[in-house]
Image (cartoon, rainbow, N blue to C red):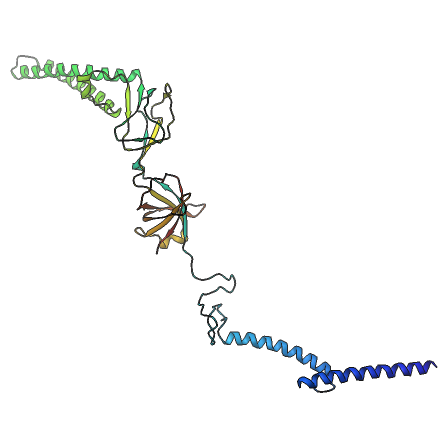
Length: 338
């Protein structure tokens, strides 16, 4: 009985196997790509053909010039693409260099910024200026109180009077000496006294000029009670650091006057940019906060020392189109035109 069951199971398996083989042969015979009895062979060959097809497609792309060994993307024989951009096979970056962007600030030349300070100390007596106010060259900025200033004027006036008297005495002794009516010793003494007093007069006059005072006006106008500090250039007042009654030491900055008439831009460049940095090249720049408006400048100087840490150096350009909104220290971004 058990043997009959085994024989029946074997017959069923054989029948199923024959049915599957016939179905596979029928499908293969429809597309004409296989023969009966080779079902597994057809499957394996299809897989091989698919792989070979992919490789052939890749070879075709290479032979048609779509992608070359050097990584250059070009048009194929069928005119599918007209791009000629060179692409790095490793980084996928184009070989065409982008325009270098330089960052920096607006600045002014040293001769366009004046720091106001006094040669001698003194207490602030008065000042008519305000921050941001425009002043002309020679305008009064502050007045200082200092007794030493009065003493200096007095010394000048006294030395002037004494010099005038000693000069007359020197000339008289010189005349008498020629006539042998006076001793040579007296003549030499009068000459020494005159020259010593004249040197004191010249020294006092020089000190007064350093303070901005014309010494010749003291003889007619008398002693000036307050030292007046005036602007050496026309410009805008900034950096005010005083108030009435504050004592300012000699040389201590009181304020600044800035002339914005011819601004410059100071840009940061790097070693790799040096070959393209020549004076005279045009520069286009934008100023932060001015709605992307484009301005023009001309490169005038290139720094001669590279920073050891950042490997950068400064380059300077003169602005062609000044704008009332420009302020020293404003941030800019610029492109060097080729």
